[in-house]
Length: 585
Image (cartoon, rainbow, N blue to C red):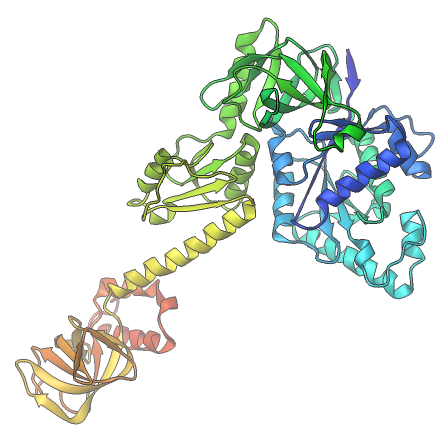
């Protein structure tokens, strides 16, 4: 038998843009208007039934529309953590997401990251343009959002419109067509933007109206569930619960779960088998506000809901893992569950970095964003950064030092893991921080590697044999030189008119020996193999000799050369091409 379940809603967005306050306001509004039973507090979720949504929305909802979905289930934990943890094969458990954007600050890196993750999971979303109450001059004049906006002073209306169209413009840059919710022509082609205030509640009824309308009109097929079938769900969190030991907070998105049911849970190495000892649900909302939450022992829970499961042998269970109850098809369920896990883990690849994350969903999100940026991943897995990870990353160093890297999302190092000079470890609880730091590190490393490569090449230098500064005529010749451009080092060969005349044996600057000097210095240089009066004379302009192979490499590194050095390099090439027209080409 099929029926529709609640639509599962997740809230995402940048830090400090008001995700938690918005959730609290939605819950608070539902509690106030829904009276007793208007909202059910589940583990990790709040269920707002259709009748309560209708009361909040009032005349906004078409009275003639026959709603068949039972309500909305909001995931209490806002942000990437909840969205990426609540996964199933092919995407997220969330049916719709609310992307919270501070209307005054606009898009931030985490906002863009949220959009990329939503696009990757193909999850429809609505923009909650929060903090409209912070727009200078804005007043709460009417319960209806549109009337309220239209009744503002003209300069305030203009500011609201400008800020909303800034969001429309930014979304357009990201390839997303959007419009204010009341101006949307086609919800399948445009993302709705709902101005809201998580402080005074403006726009909350309109936001719920858009969500319930989307769920009813476009998601009816995906909200169908099997009332009599085995339960399917995702582990939201694994934690110690006082008096119960290790428990799992689980979101059940299909079927029925009974006390005593057998469960298969995805594992890193192999599936984990256990049995439900107890199904625990929070007591009514009043008690949920107490610090010591009390639970009722249930015999059965039905999708979609959150539940705390007490079961043996769950020490190795990780958040984000899929689970299913089973009766007599254990092998099929085990294969199905483990296939889902293995699709998210990358164990072998010819090259790339090492990636670690705390949950299966966040690992998928990180992998997806790395693929978007064409960053190769050699191995991706769940758990703390181990000695094996460091050893694996170190083995990359000789092949490509830029890939001797471990990226860790929401993970720590094992206690006995020490660092390695060859391996870069980057960890954070914000994905965009990890990728941003990695890209910055790679850019710096490339510059350092190229600079080192440049230092190994013969650099272009133009210098003048100064008049009246002959210290020795030959064996070796020692002359005073004015470095006009570039850099000269001991070991460099010296040339005149495209012909080598000797090699720099030593350099003295202000009576101190040095291995190299640059533009602007006047130095004494000893040149082995050259004789003053034969190969060179006072007033001559001399150059360093550049081997052809060094010249070819240097052409790729000209961004590290000054404009003057590039000109000297061109002059050297012109001189060499008098005898060989294709020199350095």
